[in-house]
Length: 524
Image (cartoon, rainbow, N blue to C red; front, side, top):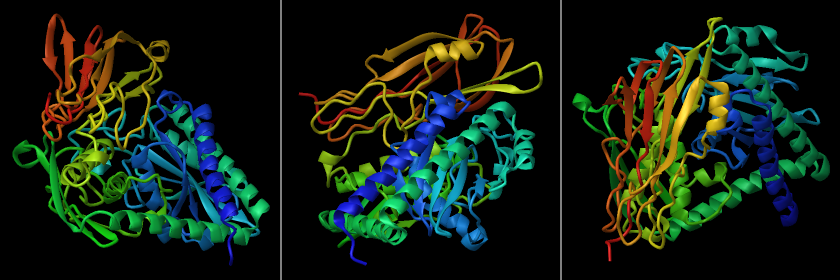
C-alpha cells in the first residue's frame, strides 16, 4: 500500500497526542496524590501485535517496559479471546513487568470488528498489599512478601466494570478507596485513548492506519541503524555499583559490555552481580528499558520511540543475576534504583567515545521515602514521595539543581498538599548548596526536605541509593556529594539506612539530603 508521508506524520503525532491526553485524564481523575500531584504514571499505545507506537511524555522507565507488556500478555491471553469493551488488569513481572506497585490496565481497541491497537495505562499504586504498608519490604526474601500478584484478568467488559474484581482488589490493599479511585481513573484513561484511535481510523481508514503503524516501526529502525552506524565499531565496557546487596553486603556490581558492529549494537549485561539480598533486583524488561533509553541518548537523535527502534539492539542478561533474577525475586526498588545504575554503567562505557552527548553522574536514585499512617477504621493513608537531586554537568554547561535525571520524570508533592492530607509537617524545603561536584562545569545541587511526624505513629520505608557510591564526575570533574537520610528523635540524630522499614513515633523528624551531580572537566 502506498502511503502518503503527510498522512503518516499526522497519524504519528495523533498517536502521541492521544497518549498525552490519556495521561491528562489519569492525572485529573486519580485519587492518590502520588498520581494527581507527582505524576507517577505513564500512557502508551501499541499496534495490534503489542509493539509500542505512541507514548506520552511520561516516565522513561515505564515506557521502555511498556514496549513489551502487551506483546508478552498476548502470549497468555490470545487476541482471539478478546472482545470489544474488554479491559485487562495485571502487574506480574513476567508480562513485561516493572515492580508490583506498577499496575497496568490494557484495553484492546476494535475498529470494524478487528483489533487495530491497544491503549495502555500504567500507574503506581501507593499500596498493593504485601508484608509492609506501601508494598516495599527491604528484607523480602521473595516477591510474594512484597505485594499482591495480579495475573491478567478482565476488570471490565462491554457489560461494565466487574464489581467482583474490584472488591477482590480492595480487599487486598491497605487504602481501598484510593485503590478504587485510581483504578477507575486508569479505565477512563484507556477509554480516552480508544476514542482517539477510532477517530484516526475513521479519518484515514483502517488499512491506512494499520499500514502507518508498520511504517513507523520501519522508520525508527532505519534511524536507529543510521545512528549506530555513525558510532565507531568497537567493544566498550563500563561498570558502576549499587550501594550494597552484593556478596557480604558489599556494593553490587552493574557491568555492561557494548559491542558496536556496523548498524547493530549489543549490550551484554551478563557480567553484573548475582541476585542481591534486598529489593534492588529488577526484571529483565526494566533492564531492556534502561538500555533502550541509553541507546537513544547515544544516538543523539529525537527519534520516535517504538518497537522498530529496538530492532537493532541486542540485549543480553544472565539468568540468576540482579538484572534477570527469576520470577520470584523481590524487585520493588529495582524499578527506579537498579535501572538507573545500568544507565550510569553505559555512560561510563561510552565516556570517551561520545562525551558531548553524555552527562556526568547525576542523582540516579529516586530518593524515595514513604509514610504510612493507620486510620481508625483499619485502613491506611499512604504518602509516597521521591526527591530531586543534582544533574551531572555536561561538556558545555553546569548541571541543573533539584531535578530528576534519566529514567525518572516525576514531580514532588507540594508541602501544602502533604500538610492538608497527612499528619505531617514539612519543616524544611531547600537546596543542598554545594552538593554538586566541582569541575570546569560543576554538577547540580540536590534538595533537602524534612518531615515532622504529627500522628501517634507512622510506618516509614526508604529506598535511597547513592548514600555510599557518589555520582561520578567525567573527564576530571569531581563527584557529587552522597545522599544522606536521618532521623531526629529526643535530641539525638541517627542515620537511616537507604533500604529500610521502621516505625516512627510522634514528633520524629525525618530529613533527606539528596546527592549532587558530578562535575565535568578539570577546574580551571
